[in-house]
Image (cartoon, rainbow, N blue to C red; front, side, top):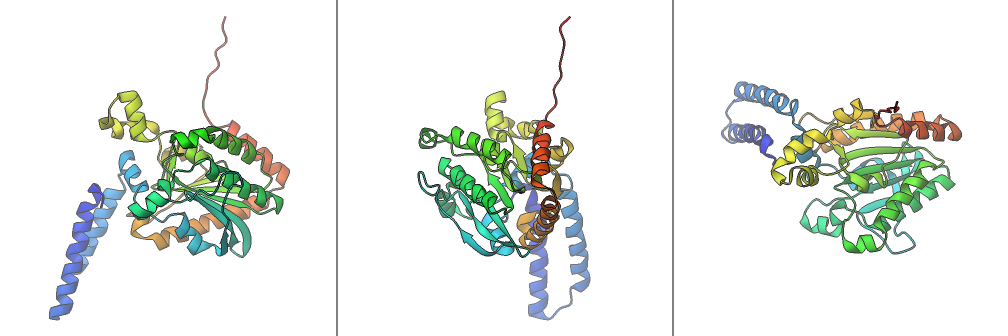
Length: 318
């Protein structure tokens, strides 16, 4: 339970208790329950319509949000996971494979966090090593060979920062992915489902169309990392979150992403099924649009999309 969710959870528990008492003692509390449910909806709107950037960071990191494996299970038919990069080994922080979406073949790749400590340790908290990015590129090249669209799901604090990852060429693996994906001759759709952190997200995040769930985040650095560098204190993480402009609304306004996918009012973790259904509709729409564009034109549009990102000024010296 997040701190700002406590008033909502307390009211939900009060409703559950009253329903239980009414059922056990055969008492009619319908009028009182109606008022409590109305108050609950009002409280949800008051809280979730005015979330701060830091509160959205907390929501994006919530372990109960649907993860890549949940989306694959719900949306992809006949999914076959493929393992290994054919250089070093397999990386459980990134999962990917072939399957059917809406009756058509696609390649799906995504970061995978855990639901609990044990699974998070096994998945390295969704932080990929070089072999994870190399595996992702291998699958994308497979999709290109058979003219199959690629869908990537982003949910990572960042690439693994350990010595062993650097020794195996972490930066090189991400850079090669960016270079290769930029000219991949097949449609690519990216959806940020939770946390989009730094190069760890970019390693599989270059796409023709980028969507974000309403309460997900996408940033060059974590708020904690930014606070440590600029303010020299973790106490400034909320200030850093605001300065980073990492929310979906900020990124859509800056034209870094193309679309916001709505979540249930109280967040994806409160209604995973509805969230997954919303992602399904958005993904279906994106693929239908991209599949109509000839490949050469698709590559030109992809190039133009990334050339337009950012604002700069030129000053000519007298």
